[in-house]
Image (cartoon, rainbow, N blue to C red):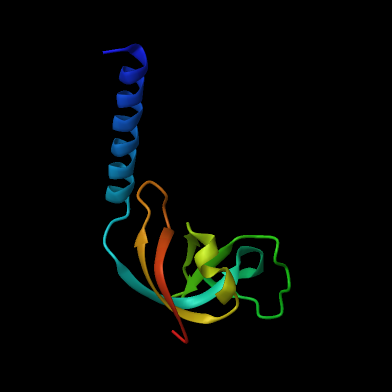
Length: 111
């Protein structure tokens, strides 16, 4: 087998392996509800987070402040950007190796 074919097969195997690991990292789907908020607009009070509705800063990432006052990062920002500042219900999966980070599968307004 030529050197180029060997390299091609190794790259293909590495890509398949990486995709498999990524799929394993996605875990089980869970349903969450809360407010999508710019992380620069999250306030903390007595150990609970909230989204400051008067905040106009949009320089940060969108996070979910869930109904229990806990903040979760969103791995796929493009999915949630249009709903920033709104109460939502989401179907999502935890991202393995990234604590408190979720991958959003679907999003519904009015959670």
